[in-house]
Image 1 (tube, rainbow, N blue to C red):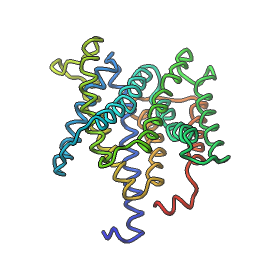
Image 2 (cartoon, one colour):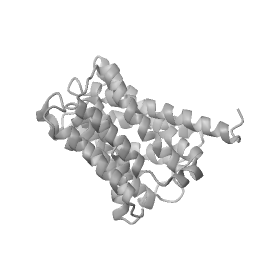
Image 3 (cartoon, one colour):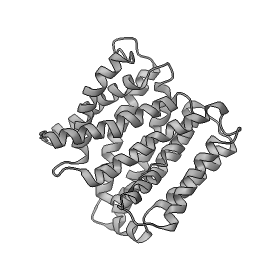
Image 4 (cartoon, rainbow, N blue to C red):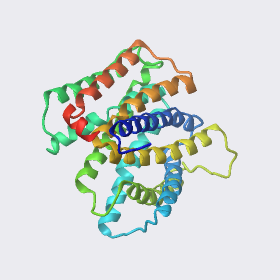
Length: 305
């Protein structure tokens, strides 16, 4: 296939975006499975880092990459590990033990909205009434999940919607930090690899001291295989997302949020047998509408894609 042909490039970009989103969304019900027998965040995150180091290390080794370290880079990698994985994934795992996978899929779709709020505060983005409306609609979707007594199977667990929202806040902080503080000479794959290496060093003692260590020598069951699968898929989809941004443009790449959310809901129905109230379906519609409104202007999309 001739990738220089605009029609072929568009086809490749759309197939890649949908495939990445489909895979990424599948990690949400897998995360619920991983916590289903009581595995705790630090233990899960430690092994997620280890698997990320292995998968991304293979990719970087094949590219002939060699690490370069200094104080600035070590601080950068440590901050990415803490702000981009340890804190958000820790709260995500806590919420995953309490909330339906479909709800987690809808909550994670608020990342672009929080990212825009932070970017506006840092004056990295210009104010737009349309995008502000998108943010408000996204937050209205969270209200539809948390407040009605009939929205969740167990209404008393609505507080965990707030717990789940901590993850997109930190993902949004990370994206803005990367946008303004990425050191010269780094790229996304090597950054994620080095952040995972630092993350292993941080979470190994935390998992042991807190009693959350997961012994890999004990018999494996579905939750352990789910942890392996979600860690591998996360590493692959992150690399795929970075490739997609380079191939189709940043504005096109961010649209992966749509298939991630929708596939997360559908996989939760298929794999976990979940069913949702009218409030949850309404929240899904609202959050997708909010995503549409917070996207940059259409002319920028066309230039990027």
